[in-house]
Image (cartoon, rainbow, N blue to C red):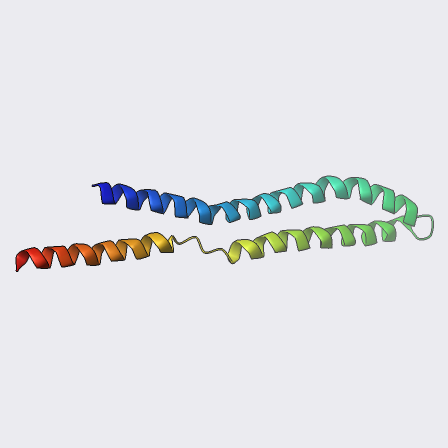
Length: 113
């Protein structure tokens, strides 16, 4: 029973270690989205006003919105890539359970002899 508790504790620790980067990447995606929305509203307004002194306002809006959208897409893409590269399988626990199984089988075989 003690062995089972130890294995569960190991699985829990290892899972937390592997999930933490996923949580950080998810927070990066969410934070990037918020920054894009609020920041783009203010920057877009200022940039459009500045550019519309030299070009039609619709073109100034199009250029400004395109640049800001590209920046947001890049930030979301970076966070998504980090999430895809995470391995959340608790390998240490799996290996430890395999070792425990082999040990237990050896114990059983030695007592049956």
